[in-house]
Length: 366
Image 1 (cartoon, rainbow, N blue to C red):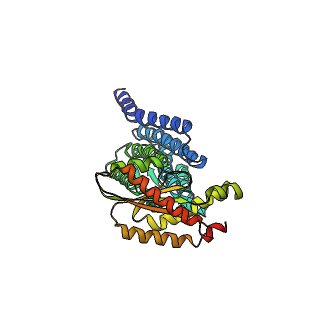
Image 2: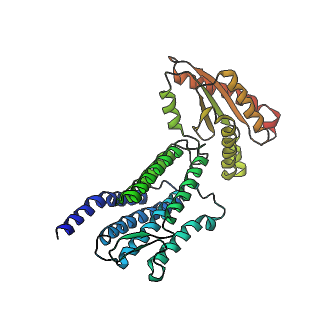
Image 3: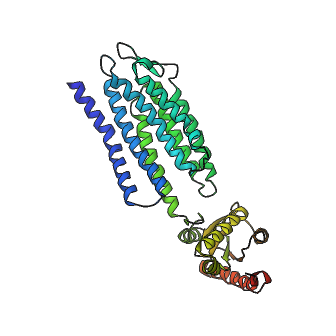
């Protein structure tokens, strides 16, 4: 009875905080429309998975201390293996932003893990993953490390896709590396020292942390072009007031004409195309922002004016392959200057360039 009370108290102390955290996250997802429906559904499934993982690990903790093995001992252990893989798989689905052309092939490692663990739960398949002797002592089988290897595969894919997102979210790889290091450490500790609940706690924290990280990054970006938004631009220029910088103002010509004559889909396509060219030319050297409907800004901190002027020329040359024109204006900021006046000056130079473009033959053809 003393052991049962101690075990119950331990389970409560260990599992109550993560369960409450999961419930809060589910309520938050339900009441805040931040991501697409598919991403929200994946997060919901991830929350359900880590909740069930906590339950499975608690059941395994209790049954592992019995005098003899039971069906629940096998079932909870095998389900725990599946859920560990499933949670990492779901996080990877979110990171890859639905890029895979072969979703079934991508899911094969997870399906293989489910098959092996299911067989191990059944009497005729016991021993594939692990087996418990008559004294309930755990012994790993020939496929005993299968979930760990599959977790490693999905972890590498998660890291790969986070670097694919690097151009739009430079901190995502760092966050993923932190999550993976924590999960790997927890897995090693569980394997070597037979610690309980470590990996499940890390996975609960990882799902919550990853959600709020992505939500924060989403609020910083324009939903159409995925460039940083107007608020981020003004926060950044105020943050950099003690440093030299060059402000580049840009404006897409004829956006209203595209919207009025060709429809808003054509206007959106123009904005996306232009923003992609901006990223190709400027992203290595500057932070890019969409500050208004057809207005864009860039902040350069390490390049001189002549180099940036050459980049602007490259940008204009790249635009010639499209039907779009973008007016540009540069202004230099030195610590002590009025930053608002510098931004206004870059805008004035951009509008001057805009007038020249309007008087050009290419503009008159539209």
